[in-house]
Length: 96
Image (cartoon, rainbow, N blue to C red; front, top):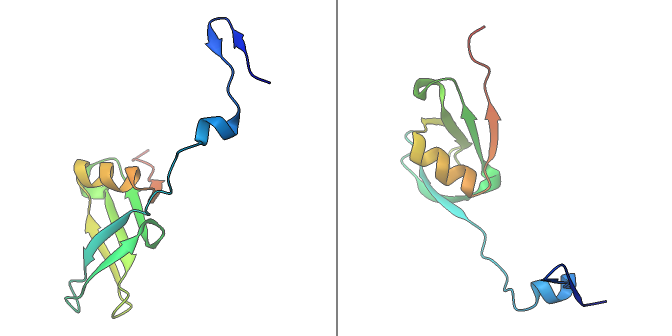
């Protein structure tokens, strides 16, 4: 059922998504300070914690080479890239 209503053309879901191509998954480059390994991680392998200040905002992951948990500070740009790439985010409560 397609037509024009209030100057806006109706469109089916199939028509709206026709021509869209599959999007490549986002990967992030990371390094482990323990084993010095360099690798790529998908968004599901990372966690972002946003605290009340830059000192309490960080991201973490488990090194795929040595299995150690790595925690690194996350500035504004890193937060922007990780959230935009679909990394799961936890907002930490500030002081009461």
